[in-house]
Length: 124
Image 1 (cartoon, one colour):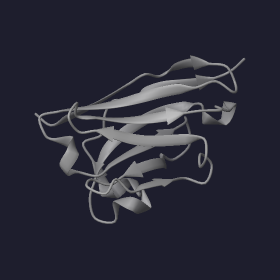
Image 2 (image 1 turned 120 degrees about the vertical axis):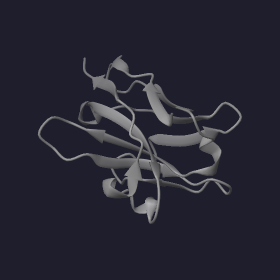
Image 3 (image 1 turned 60 degrees about the vertical axis):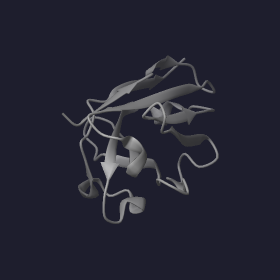
Image 4 (image 1 turned 90 degrees about the horizontal axis):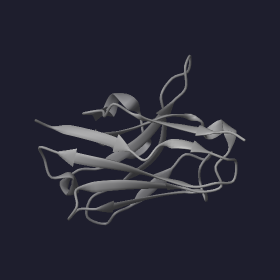
């Protein structure tokens, strides 16, 4: 069964850091582009970052550029999202998914096998 599971969310103060993990089961994650998205209640899910396979090209939303870093460990079948200098507006449920087509544009309809999400709350 193809499945992605997100973990690593939690409560952090502004300026703090968290590392999210996206763990795959049922398939080899290393052969597929992976994206991280986030969603707050009442708003559409938005792309945060994504990473390619072989050359590991990465893309970021402007709102997280220079603060977040995506990486992958194909041996462990995990994609990470390192989040630094977190802001209250980063509060959301974070999801990972498998990309297809023009995945680098981070359009939700070009992603599938969504995980259940992990909550990130940035608050003092």
